[in-house]
Image (cartoon, rainbow, N blue to C red; front, side, top):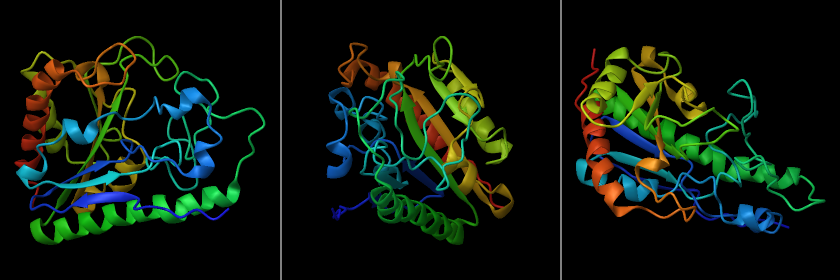
Length: 267
Protein backbone atom coordinates (compact mmCIF):
# COMPACT_ATOMS: atom_id res chain seq x y z
CA UNK A 1 0.00 0.00 0.00
CA UNK A 2 1.43 3.36 -1.04
CA UNK A 3 1.00 6.16 1.48
CA UNK A 4 0.14 9.64 0.27
CA UNK A 5 1.69 11.85 2.93
CA UNK A 6 0.19 15.20 3.83
CA UNK A 7 2.34 18.20 4.77
CA UNK A 8 4.69 16.97 7.53
CA UNK A 9 4.93 20.32 9.27
CA UNK A 10 3.69 23.90 9.31
CA UNK A 11 6.13 26.80 9.46
CA UNK A 12 5.84 30.42 10.52
CA UNK A 13 8.85 32.50 9.54
CA UNK A 14 9.50 35.25 12.04
CA UNK A 15 11.98 38.05 12.53
CA UNK A 16 13.89 37.23 15.71
CA UNK A 17 16.92 35.11 16.64
CA UNK A 18 14.64 32.41 18.06
CA UNK A 19 13.08 29.36 16.39
CA UNK A 20 10.55 27.25 18.29
CA UNK A 21 10.22 23.58 17.33
CA UNK A 22 7.09 21.58 18.25
CA UNK A 23 7.87 17.99 17.28
CA UNK A 24 5.37 16.09 19.46
CA UNK A 25 2.13 18.08 19.17
CA UNK A 26 1.03 16.49 15.88
CA UNK A 27 -2.16 14.44 15.73
CA UNK A 28 -2.15 12.93 12.22
CA UNK A 29 -1.81 9.18 11.71
CA UNK A 30 -1.07 7.34 8.49
CA UNK A 31 -3.67 4.69 7.56
CA UNK A 32 -1.07 1.96 8.05
CA UNK A 33 -0.41 3.02 11.63
CA UNK A 34 -4.01 3.86 12.52
CA UNK A 35 -5.34 0.42 11.64
CA UNK A 36 -2.77 -1.33 13.84
CA UNK A 37 -3.29 0.69 17.05
CA UNK A 38 -5.32 -0.50 20.01
CA UNK A 39 -8.20 1.84 21.03
CA UNK A 40 -6.22 3.31 23.91
CA UNK A 41 -3.40 4.28 21.56
CA UNK A 42 -5.82 5.78 19.02
CA UNK A 43 -6.57 8.44 21.66
CA UNK A 44 -2.90 9.49 21.30
CA UNK A 45 -2.37 9.79 25.07
CA UNK A 46 1.36 10.55 24.87
CA UNK A 47 0.95 13.64 22.71
CA UNK A 48 2.50 16.93 23.83
CA UNK A 49 -1.02 18.27 24.11
CA UNK A 50 -2.02 21.80 23.07
CA UNK A 51 1.52 23.11 22.64
CA UNK A 52 0.58 25.38 19.68
CA UNK A 53 -2.32 26.87 21.66
CA UNK A 54 -0.18 27.28 24.77
CA UNK A 55 2.42 29.25 22.80
CA UNK A 56 -0.13 31.22 20.77
CA UNK A 57 1.80 34.45 21.40
CA UNK A 58 4.86 33.49 19.33
CA UNK A 59 3.81 34.85 15.96
CA UNK A 60 3.01 38.27 17.44
CA UNK A 61 6.50 38.28 18.97
CA UNK A 62 8.08 37.63 15.58
CA UNK A 63 9.33 34.19 16.62
CA UNK A 64 9.70 31.50 13.95
CA UNK A 65 7.86 28.21 14.50
CA UNK A 66 8.11 24.74 12.96
CA UNK A 67 5.20 22.56 14.10
CA UNK A 68 4.91 18.85 13.32
CA UNK A 69 1.62 17.55 11.94
CA UNK A 70 2.11 13.79 12.39
CA UNK A 71 1.81 12.02 15.72
CA UNK A 72 4.92 10.69 17.41
CA UNK A 73 3.22 7.27 17.07
CA UNK A 74 3.93 7.45 13.32
CA UNK A 75 7.54 8.56 13.80
CA UNK A 76 9.26 10.34 16.66
CA UNK A 77 11.01 13.44 15.36
CA UNK A 78 13.00 13.80 18.57
CA UNK A 79 14.85 10.51 18.08
CA UNK A 80 17.85 9.90 15.81
CA UNK A 81 17.29 8.45 12.37
CA UNK A 82 19.40 5.41 13.32
CA UNK A 83 17.20 4.91 16.44
CA UNK A 84 20.11 4.77 18.90
CA UNK A 85 18.86 5.20 22.51
CA UNK A 86 19.24 8.70 23.95
CA UNK A 87 18.73 7.84 27.60
CA UNK A 88 19.83 5.04 29.89
CA UNK A 89 16.87 3.04 31.17
CA UNK A 90 13.45 2.84 29.56
CA UNK A 91 12.63 5.13 26.68
CA UNK A 92 10.67 5.13 23.43
CA UNK A 93 12.28 4.92 20.02
CA UNK A 94 11.99 6.33 16.53
CA UNK A 95 8.99 4.05 15.96
CA UNK A 96 7.37 3.63 19.39
CA UNK A 97 5.80 0.29 20.24
CA UNK A 98 4.67 0.94 23.83
CA UNK A 99 2.68 3.71 25.49
CA UNK A 100 4.07 5.69 28.42
CA UNK A 101 2.10 3.33 30.70
CA UNK A 102 4.17 0.49 29.19
CA UNK A 103 1.21 -1.17 27.45
CA UNK A 104 1.58 -2.24 23.84
CA UNK A 105 0.34 0.27 21.28
CA UNK A 106 -0.44 -2.38 18.70
CA UNK A 107 -3.08 -5.01 18.17
CA UNK A 108 -1.88 -8.59 18.73
CA UNK A 109 -0.18 -10.10 15.71
CA UNK A 110 0.78 -6.74 14.18
CA UNK A 111 3.96 -6.96 12.14
CA UNK A 112 6.47 -4.15 11.63
CA UNK A 113 6.08 -2.55 8.22
CA UNK A 114 9.68 -1.71 7.38
CA UNK A 115 8.81 -0.17 4.01
CA UNK A 116 6.29 2.15 5.63
CA UNK A 117 8.78 3.11 8.32
CA UNK A 118 11.34 4.04 5.69
CA UNK A 119 8.72 6.13 3.90
CA UNK A 120 8.02 7.96 7.16
CA UNK A 121 11.72 8.73 7.53
CA UNK A 122 11.83 10.04 3.97
CA UNK A 123 8.59 12.02 3.97
CA UNK A 124 8.28 13.20 7.60
CA UNK A 125 11.50 12.93 9.64
CA UNK A 126 13.98 14.18 7.05
CA UNK A 127 11.87 17.15 5.85
CA UNK A 128 11.29 18.30 9.44
CA UNK A 129 14.97 18.30 10.30
CA UNK A 130 15.89 19.86 6.97
CA UNK A 131 13.45 22.68 7.71
CA UNK A 132 14.96 23.23 11.17
CA UNK A 133 18.44 23.32 9.67
CA UNK A 134 17.41 25.75 6.93
CA UNK A 135 15.57 28.07 9.29
CA UNK A 136 18.45 28.12 11.79
CA UNK A 137 20.85 28.95 8.95
CA UNK A 138 18.59 31.81 7.82
CA UNK A 139 18.38 33.20 11.35
CA UNK A 140 22.12 32.89 11.91
CA UNK A 141 22.79 34.68 8.63
CA UNK A 142 20.70 37.62 9.84
CA UNK A 143 21.67 37.84 13.51
CA UNK A 144 25.06 36.15 13.67
CA UNK A 145 23.62 33.41 15.87
CA UNK A 146 20.43 31.37 16.22
CA UNK A 147 18.54 29.86 19.15
CA UNK A 148 16.40 26.73 18.87
CA UNK A 149 13.75 26.25 21.56
CA UNK A 150 12.32 22.73 21.50
CA UNK A 151 8.87 22.88 23.12
CA UNK A 152 7.56 19.75 24.85
CA UNK A 153 5.18 18.72 27.60
CA UNK A 154 4.57 15.55 29.61
CA UNK A 155 2.30 14.34 32.41
CA UNK A 156 3.61 15.18 35.88
CA UNK A 157 3.85 11.50 36.75
CA UNK A 158 5.19 8.85 34.36
CA UNK A 159 6.71 5.97 36.38
CA UNK A 160 8.18 4.46 33.21
CA UNK A 161 10.56 7.43 32.94
CA UNK A 162 11.01 8.84 36.45
CA UNK A 163 10.05 8.40 40.07
CA UNK A 164 7.68 10.75 41.86
CA UNK A 165 6.36 14.00 40.41
CA UNK A 166 8.14 16.05 37.77
CA UNK A 167 9.01 19.72 38.44
CA UNK A 168 6.91 22.21 36.45
CA UNK A 169 9.68 23.49 34.15
CA UNK A 170 12.28 20.93 33.02
CA UNK A 171 15.03 22.58 31.02
CA UNK A 172 17.54 20.59 29.01
CA UNK A 173 20.75 21.65 27.30
CA UNK A 174 22.47 18.25 27.08
CA UNK A 175 24.38 19.01 30.29
CA UNK A 176 25.43 22.41 29.00
CA UNK A 177 26.84 21.30 25.66
CA UNK A 178 23.92 22.43 23.45
CA UNK A 179 23.80 26.13 24.29
CA UNK A 180 25.62 29.00 25.94
CA UNK A 181 25.51 29.01 29.76
CA UNK A 182 24.26 32.59 29.45
CA UNK A 183 21.12 31.33 27.72
CA UNK A 184 20.28 28.73 30.34
CA UNK A 185 20.90 31.24 33.13
CA UNK A 186 18.50 33.71 31.51
CA UNK A 187 15.84 31.00 31.25
CA UNK A 188 16.29 29.93 34.87
CA UNK A 189 16.06 33.51 36.09
CA UNK A 190 12.84 34.06 34.11
CA UNK A 191 11.15 31.30 36.12
CA UNK A 192 12.95 31.76 39.45
CA UNK A 193 10.71 34.61 40.61
CA UNK A 194 7.54 32.58 40.02
CA UNK A 195 5.78 29.93 42.08
CA UNK A 196 6.67 27.25 39.52
CA UNK A 197 9.29 24.62 40.27
CA UNK A 198 12.15 24.06 37.86
CA UNK A 199 15.18 21.89 37.20
CA UNK A 200 17.92 22.02 34.58
CA UNK A 201 19.36 18.89 32.98
CA UNK A 202 17.49 16.58 35.31
CA UNK A 203 15.64 13.58 33.89
CA UNK A 204 15.17 15.46 30.60
CA UNK A 205 18.43 16.79 29.23
CA UNK A 206 17.18 17.41 25.70
CA UNK A 207 16.40 14.87 23.02
CA UNK A 208 17.83 14.39 19.56
CA UNK A 209 16.71 17.80 18.29
CA UNK A 210 18.54 19.62 21.08
CA UNK A 211 21.60 17.42 20.87
CA UNK A 212 21.99 17.43 17.09
CA UNK A 213 21.13 21.05 16.28
CA UNK A 214 22.76 22.68 19.32
CA UNK A 215 26.27 23.72 18.24
CA UNK A 216 27.34 26.69 20.37
CA UNK A 217 30.76 26.73 18.72
CA UNK A 218 28.96 27.46 15.44
CA UNK A 219 26.70 30.06 17.10
CA UNK A 220 23.63 27.79 17.05
CA UNK A 221 22.21 27.22 20.51
CA UNK A 222 19.55 24.64 21.41
CA UNK A 223 17.38 24.47 24.49
CA UNK A 224 14.56 22.06 25.40
CA UNK A 225 11.68 22.74 27.75
CA UNK A 226 9.68 19.79 29.01
CA UNK A 227 6.70 21.45 30.68
CA UNK A 228 4.61 19.50 33.17
CA UNK A 229 1.07 19.13 31.85
CA UNK A 230 -0.12 19.73 35.40
CA UNK A 231 0.64 23.41 34.77
CA UNK A 232 -1.96 23.83 32.03
CA UNK A 233 -4.27 20.80 31.69
CA UNK A 234 -7.14 19.30 33.65
CA UNK A 235 -6.03 16.37 35.78
CA UNK A 236 -9.00 14.18 34.87
CA UNK A 237 -7.64 12.14 31.98
CA UNK A 238 -9.55 14.20 29.42
CA UNK A 239 -6.46 15.79 27.79
CA UNK A 240 -8.33 19.10 27.93
CA UNK A 241 -6.87 22.52 28.55
CA UNK A 242 -7.57 24.15 31.90
CA UNK A 243 -8.26 27.80 31.08
CA UNK A 244 -7.44 29.00 34.58
CA UNK A 245 -4.09 27.22 34.61
CA UNK A 246 -3.31 28.49 31.10
CA UNK A 247 -3.98 32.06 32.19
CA UNK A 248 -1.34 31.63 34.87
CA UNK A 249 1.37 29.74 33.04
CA UNK A 250 1.21 31.42 29.62
CA UNK A 251 2.64 34.73 30.88
CA UNK A 252 5.53 32.81 32.43
CA UNK A 253 6.20 31.03 29.15
CA UNK A 254 6.12 34.38 27.37
CA UNK A 255 8.58 35.80 29.89
CA UNK A 256 10.85 32.82 29.28
CA UNK A 257 10.71 33.32 25.52
CA UNK A 258 11.36 37.05 25.94
CA UNK A 259 14.40 36.26 28.09
CA UNK A 260 15.83 34.01 25.39
CA UNK A 261 15.13 36.49 22.59
CA UNK A 262 16.77 39.34 24.49
CA UNK A 263 19.84 37.26 25.40
CA UNK A 264 22.24 38.67 22.80
CA UNK A 265 24.72 35.95 21.90
CA UNK A 266 26.44 37.73 19.01
CA UNK A 267 30.22 37.51 19.23
